[in-house]
Image 1: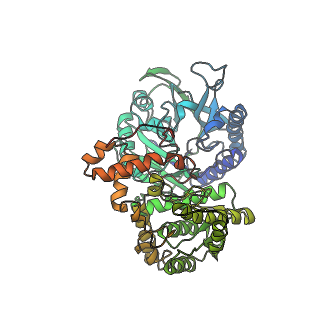
Image 2: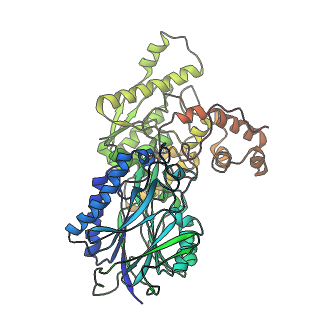
Image 3: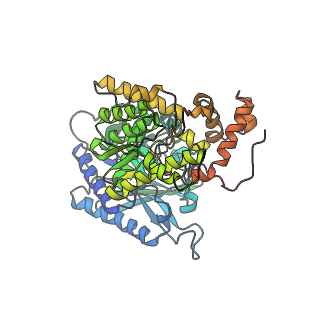
Length: 585
């Protein structure tokens, strides 16, 4: 059987940076060539970054992507890498955008893969299955392809597919089986969700069985706005054996030798398989099989849930800050668990010299909270400042007649003003620190504690915030480092400290009661009856659902934050603000 040395390039592109992304392809292809690779794979939409959203509708951007892929092919040949086949994702089009008046049926923008060889684009493939759920709107942007591209490389027939093609049965993988291919390449921009790695491997195994072929699955890493991509690239044999698997959340070149069946069909033929045409191409020359022992990429086992989420949040924050060219971040340090976790994430992502933590005590701030904020700053080494807010609050109260919750909100808004002023003065990105549970029930002050440009824990339930804090401290202990989060911040009852003796439990059910209801309602779309049947107290359910439904206007104004769940607030969950439907109790 022929053997191909595959190189799966798990890299971190940036949306819109066509030149920078092309440079990544060139540098990683050089590394692959040095490792003796005979076929190199890059992720979905590698040249443009992913997702490009409404940039698809700009014909100038489409033209730039088309030109970039042609130029890249020539540049690789100029680099002395022309004989090495490279598969790279990019944005193509064979007609006007579907939203334009001159749109043509069956033509338009295409989510495409190109096979580059000897200075030219030898073959192209257009994504067949277009996801249109969750964060995906690909039916809005792209036209589905109906042709499976099969390229004979080193005596092996290799089919090209893209991301969602793997997630649905039929179509390209069924066609690949009928075409008798030995290897199916699947290039991905598959966003992270907790436990998605547990779903991905069984899915790849199902498609390997469907195609009766080896599957080479390569996924990008990196943060893009609210999405984060974790890699987890792999190669799976036709019988489902996991041959090699890459680590999560880091750039990585996965190089592995794979024995593949020799091609048997006549090259250049076309037929119809599972509703798709099959187009065959042949590469006459590829790099020779390298001497020496076989390349083995190894098997990296996925990490525990808390470690996985922590790495996702760190990467999402780091890339949001760096790709948007912020020099530093600033956040309020209350001494509580949420701000402590956000501060630790920021220090892990950026280093302590790029993180400013500000204690903003009022007359209701307890001494232990002030001490806990200072303790965290000492543990992490971040730039720590204290800005008492009471004189400013008193100045407002001397000119406004306020009481009750209005005074509580005033304190939060004064804090927001101070953080935004520091942002304007010194150029920091303000991080807000509200968790998903608070966001769900509207337990925040608009233009107060919700102020900020990015929220690292926006998609993290409160109970998970505690678990993350404990994991991070335990991880530090295992490595012999200082635990970043004070134990007092983890152990004390949560409180906004905006009035004497205030606790979150004064307004909300305990979080171990609240979070399961929210997870069922928000993530699972259960109605009231379903939640009650699941064992939740009807009166508590009614209260929680009322809070969630009436807080939609607040969530619509919230900062972006890294998605780590199956249904994050934002593009994942789209509900009208003006909405009279209620789950009746």
